[in-house]
Image (cartoon, rainbow, N blue to C red; front, side, top):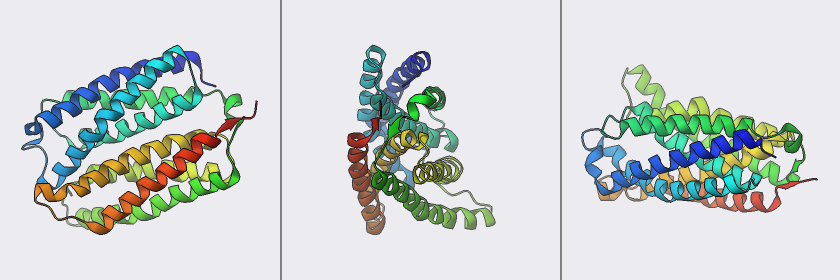
Length: 265
């Protein structure tokens, strides 16, 4: 299913990335001073939540990558790529935002490792093997609808922040979110949804990566929203509800995805 050379190299890069991400996340949790003077007060809950999620994500990714080096299983590889996509986004935010603290070189390295791990991993699937993958029609369409729903909900939200700020020549606090979402994540979700709806086999692979990335990332955002009052910020109940529903729906679809993804031969 996966080219052995590319799969092994991607797994090795993911192990290194996991170790760096684990160290960076633990440093942020143990010493919040790393974010003092670097992040605005509005972004501190998000940084805390990201570190909380990154610790178990890094451990799971490292263990799965080590196991993959011993026995290559394509479903495990899809999960690994999903976690890698999470780290691409999480530390892409820190990199693009210019969180210039003692850990910034590690943010850059994690971001770079995530990019090349994804490139190697996604290009490592044998086309003939991908063509043999299969998902039930109802699940493909449900996944496609979910990804489009995410686009419909979040693109207007980011544009409502970005466009007035651009007109006023002001940089919003969370501008890096707009950069990654509008240029990478949302187009990727649209492409994946199109592939699923048109039964293009590679969409079966991308769906799993997108699901796990969405679930871990939205869970991080939900946690950051929930702990906002601890940082003296108001709790946004409507958005917290939306985030929680998105996490639960991602988990529901992800479970059915893993149970139903098969190879015909």
